[in-house]
Image 1 (cartoon, rainbow, N blue to C red):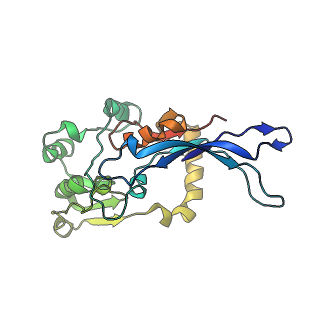
Image 2: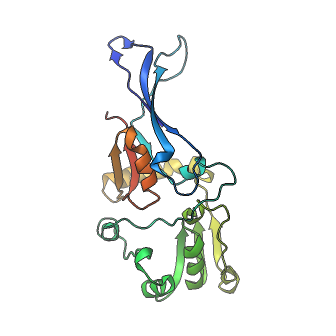
Image 3: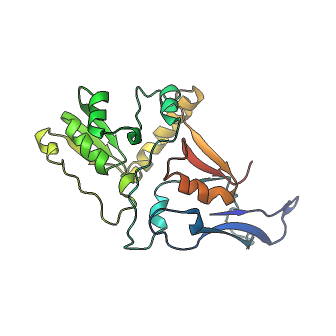
Length: 245
């Protein structure tokens, strides 16, 4: 993570060596990610583009914090703590009132996941989008309807495990003739992104596509923001503002 802070002049960029803040990983992470795993350092970088080069000088405005980053911070064969991110305080009401979900529950507040699913889905589940895996997926399998479909795009509960949890209810795929398929965004990016972009721009302008962003200011707060997404502190996409336009 870095953020440059050089000065511009009318004729271009001056001072070939400019101060640059960096967040450096101090040690490979073991167990839960901590703010102390990172260190803020000051260095210098050049803003000069070589004469005749086709390079483009850019400045980063925002940094995104995403769960996949946890994989990049560990050394091979480490043992990690299991983690299933809870919903932040107040997010249940926000998901219902602002984003339009019919119903929402926080698994941390429920003594029995099985009873909770029966209460919210008395007629069973036809379609399930899974990005959690583990215990949640295992229990949902028991509540799927005949010929149900499950789309799998992630398994955040397994990201910190050296040995993934076992799934015990896969036999229901046979007895209920369930179709379960994994999806990777890259498989569809070239073909679908232009269509998605057109759809998203139109629906954003019409306020039909609703999103939430959780923004913190300054690169120095990036470690706290990244750690927070694994403890349910953020509501919406976690971003770090590096510079204002």
